[in-house]
Image 1: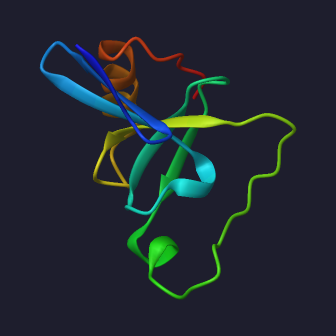
Image 2: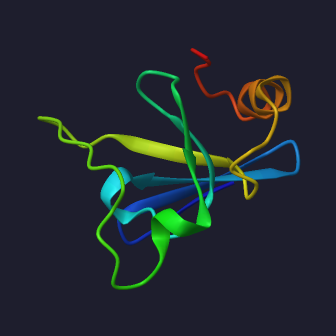
Length: 93
């Protein structure tokens, strides 16, 4: 099942849900996987506080979409890889 919400897409695979959002729209902490490169990005709570300058700014010529694989930004790499694979995301970490 796939539904589109504004600029994001939610897919349900094997009971898991991954929301694809542009990097600039990430506003919740968690572990995210780039849908293009398969890189893992950890966004801690401190990185998404309101009225705070982002700790990381990703600049690219095309929109980079990221899928959150866990609400825990410090999930183990093995678990993050398994969740990314379950969601059919590329894994490059």
